[in-house]
Image 1 (cartoon, one colour):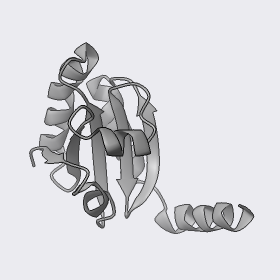
Image 2 (image 1 turned 180 degrees about the vertical axis):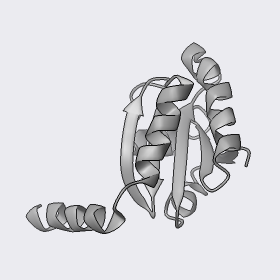
Image 3 (image 1 turned 30 degrees about the vertical axis):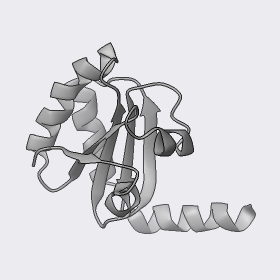
Image 4 (image 1 turned 45 degrees about the horizontal axis):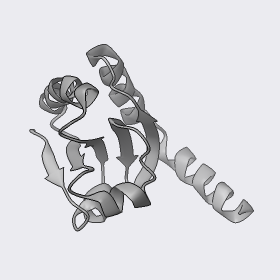
Length: 122
């Protein structure tokens, strides 16, 4: 599966879908973003069971601000609508593959229990 572009209008629908959704927050002027793009694209080909979304932070400044994106590229990974990973910086191919494997291996019942626990404490 190739990457899909998301906007402020499609962000929530995309990340709350069932399964794994990766979001690459990037900008055209960002050198590290340009170097990470082919790595991300290749991962999308290797994992057709996941959604690989790209969020142009320049064209979608409102959602970038709402997500508090301070530096790019920022990679976010959602599984079943729950944010399970977020980090700024470009990853090398092996690290991205390892990360995707870890997300696929998550016990989502345990993740949901932890989220519910955190929500009840706040």
